[in-house]
Amino acid sequence: MEQKVMDPTVEKALEQFKALDEKITHFSSIIGLADWDQKVMAPKKGRSMFAKAAGTLRTEVFKLSVSQEMGDLLDTLLSNEKTEGLDEMTKAKVREYKEYYQKSKSIPADLFQEYSILTAQANDAWEEARENNDFARYLPSLEKIVEYKRKFAEIYGYEEHPYDALLDEFEPGLTVKKLDPLFAKLRESSVKLLERIKKNGKPTKVEIFDQSFEIEKQKEFNRFILPIIGFDMNAGRMDETVHPFAQTVNTGDVRLTTRYLEKNVRSALFGTIHEAGHGIYEQHVNPAFEESVLQSGASFGIHESQSRFLENMVGRSKEFWKYFYPKLQEYFPNQLENVSVEDFYRAVNTVQPSFIRVEADELTYNLHIMLRYEIEKALIGGEIEAKDLPAIWNQKMQDYLGVTPNTDTEGVLQDVHWSFGGIGYFPSYSLGNLYAAQILRTIQNEVPEFNNHIENGRFDLIQEWLKEKIHQYGKLYTPNELIVRVTGEELNADYLVEYLEKKYTEVYEL
Ligand code: ZN
Image 1 (spheres, protein in one colour):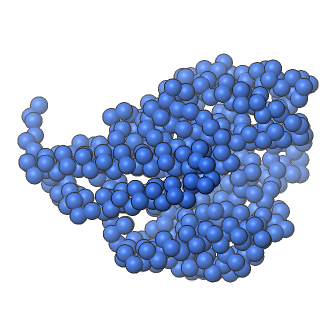
Image 2: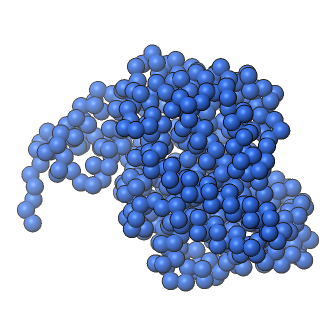
Image 3: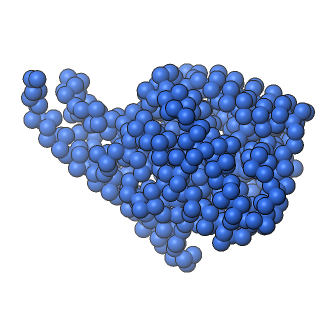
């Protein structure tokens, strides 16, 4: 084969680009470690100083990402004829940095400064407002955040809807035009299914969870299942925090956290499986992508698909509990001795409309997201104003879930996201469910006896498939490219709709 001779300017740029990418990634991994330390280990009194130190490092990383050097390198590598010789990996890195560079550069420095101050204050306002059920305390900050986000959307640019510019930050390439029909289908079918469950569903024995489960034993059980479901304990660890999360230092050091509650055994159990889904993804990224911007997952939505696949589609399946339930009974004989595996399986799949998103079940969870999506879209589109949110929120809760929050604390004030400017973030959660169901269909076709593997505790075969098809690629492909490569088609809501329909028809004997 003829060897292409590379332009020496490009060759040199490639070398410098690789070094710069490595430097940014190294700093970012130290920042990740510092974040983990603040949340998990740091004593309270040291936290504010520590936050400042991490902030300084974060600013340096930002400067590197938008530096003149980065701009020049991107220019050289992007100039059309020359980039044809670039390999797939470099092209993907250029794509990632270019996106960030252009967006960051497009916001005038003073505007960005004002916005940073605003979000810091908004977070305090939100905390106080939530604590005191006082939406008015939060409203001025929220109004300003919406105003800034509308400005940013105009600056970033969009083709059809200003909200597209914000969605793109979390799920590259996603638009209102693509999302509207997906979410509409899911919302309509979920509302109907919920109605049927309420009317004709055979109640589950959810009361089995109204018991104390010793925390020490919960810890042991969680540590017992983690390696079996595929988390490599030699390349990670698990600790405790109030808000569970997964943090990657590098592919050989992925840290999970969980939260144990004596009166709620489900919290740690499914929280751990969820975070393990995120963690296993990161452990499986191709080592060739390490020390580069590609070492993380494809997008928020794809990442969430991996945690939800493991938590819901595997972790709440009958096969999963056929394997693990006898063991769980050994840990908790007093609580579970007289509960059958069938009753336990039905109980972990109980549908119960509630006010709080993070406590929602697998079916109603998406309705919480639809409501937030519709509100964000209308806010950024200028169809509604922040002051109208409590009323709109409560109306949608009633329409979709059939419940109305008693207070704004249980309603519009429950989530932190808007206070840090995270408008466009929420749809990722439901996208994760949509991707996961589509991936489930494919894996069931491609891995013979998929369900039997779960029932026999053979998670290695499933994880191998996920690694080969999804995990190893890190950020190499855009989310849309990836889902098409894996499943042969673009994202389609039918798979989740059918999955939910089938699951709950069985669980509730509809
Ligand atoms: Zn998650």
